[in-house]
Length: 196
Image 1 (spheres, rainbow, N blue to C red):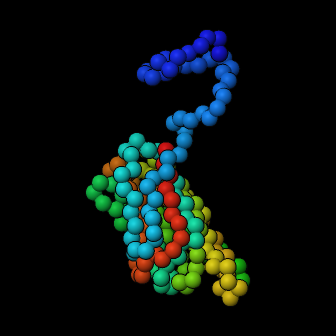
Image 2 (cartoon, helix red, strand yellow):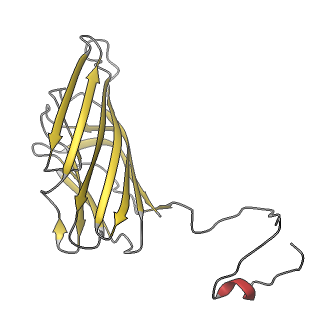
Image 3 (cartoon, rainbow, N blue to C red):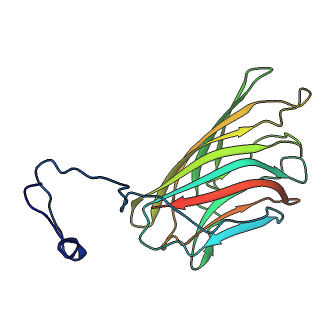
């Protein structure tokens, strides 16, 4: 940079930096992910994170070793919502699923959740996942996910991989994300949500 700048130069308005600036230390800013308040103990049939800022354009949910108390199809699902509540229909989702043993491949359309459970894997199944949601236009969100199921036991290790994609028009401003099961409860694992 050809001249020194003070903090006041960047506090308001728009500043354009030209040349080849050099930064030292830790650089933070608008591109950083912010973690929401964690869900805490997974022990209910439905868990909702609320209070997402109205200005966010990306949402990222991560699962690690998430389990449920009953066998699938307990239909775990991920849904988005607004101040009016959780959206329970109108998703245009599709999933592809493959698992070892018999090289099965399944394609399933889905309208009740953005991302959900396919199959009958048993209560011992442990789910890990990465799920991305993008605000593509006004109140329309597009999403994709990779979901893996494996309990690690030699007698029940299916190594299931699911890939999800889709879109939903929320009809309002996103301010919450929900995970739920239609039978039993969640009973273990970690779920975290980040936004920017």
